[in-house]
Amino acid sequence: YPQIIDVSFPGQEFRISTDRLLDEDGLVLGFVKLVQDRTREVELLRSKSEFITIAAHQLRTPLTAINWIFEGFTKNEALSKEDKELTMNGLAAARKLLKIVNDLLDVSKIEEGRFGYNFVETDLIGFMSEVLTNAQAEAKEHGINLYLDKGIEQQLMVTIDPNRLGLAISNLIDNAIRYNVENGSVTVSIKRL
Image 1 (cartoon, helix red, strand yellow):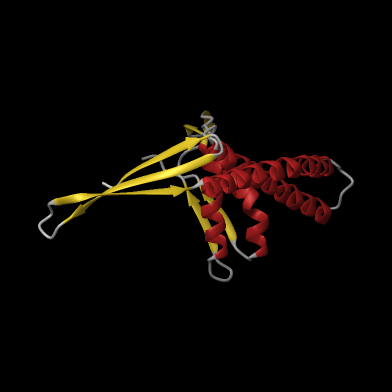
Image 2 (spheres, rainbow, N blue to C red):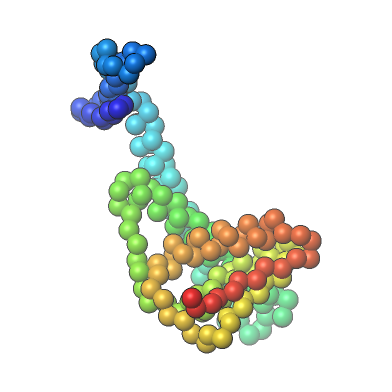
């Protein structure tokens, strides 16, 4: 107790809660049942999920084009060193933004019960190096140095979902950058345990 049951009818959603009424000695005197109409609440949640899905899909197409443009510029040998660095920062930012849009789509999938993992064999050292490279522009903006301590490993194969783990690690690194001291550093260490 309380017992909670969600009941659906076409166009209506209810939550029914049942609980006991007890006296001072803990003996059951009776029961109370509360019926709550959740139709509007459920419809608002559904509308929010649909909006996120539509907005994310609409954003993904132009972001993919921007990503391709920056990738094309990175291959241009005529760019100066400064322009090449700006292009790499733009590419990292475009990739990060595209990743955020994809994460929004994943939120919608979770709410609809269609979310799953995609596990692949991955070199953890190369993976972490790429995550740190993507965070380099933000670190530079905050005056923070990023370091990867690989330990004695040259390669460390693990089975992970690179998108999910990348999101988690990126969030940790973002926090480490934002809440660091002036001219600080962030070191990611990899050790086999």
